[in-house]
Image 1 (cartoon, rainbow, N blue to C red):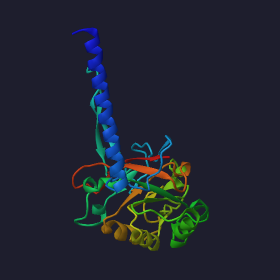
Image 2: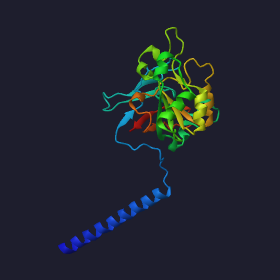
Image 3: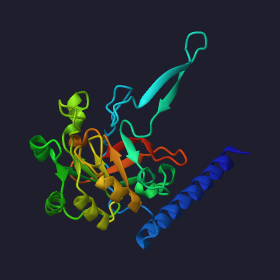
Length: 271
């Protein structure tokens, strides 16, 4: 083939590709304009900053029952093998983790069956630090939600509403879990607040403490009402003080083991 012919062939190929891409872009624009896309309109317009909302953890990380939540056992050592790996024994509700509906229902949705579109959602952060400084068992109440809405606008359907109580800073101390006399003490949500959020079609709630309910709860009212409704929670979140009250999108890396009642998760916010 002559050089001139080769050049003409390349030109024709480039023009064909350009037409193809132009057509694809036009089709995409039409789909978006017609509302046929599944993207959540309320997702934040990311500027490239990512905040990790997940604690790194090992067997010393605080747990509700006080027992190690993860155990390591060498399965293969580097010496003599050239690679290494651990055998892990992990309890589902440890570290930064998800409470799936199945956690507090006999036949609810497992962590493996959570709808993917509920795992990427707008993040709304309620600042409870002042109340928590006065009361270790402070709760997010309807008034706190109303104050957030007054300052920031409506809570989007499908959102993750997280409580920043400042408790994450205590994670390496006994005060993260209990008072000196051994009584559970940490902030959480009130049932009245989560009932309000359920009415707004909020996908999940999150806390920077050991439990969705406050430490002094005697009946786990939030667990028993929020989870059976098909919603989920995230416990032991980190770095909520590094994200704004609104405008971030949270990506919830839920585990996907069948019949799971929850499990450790990698949770990240994109700003």
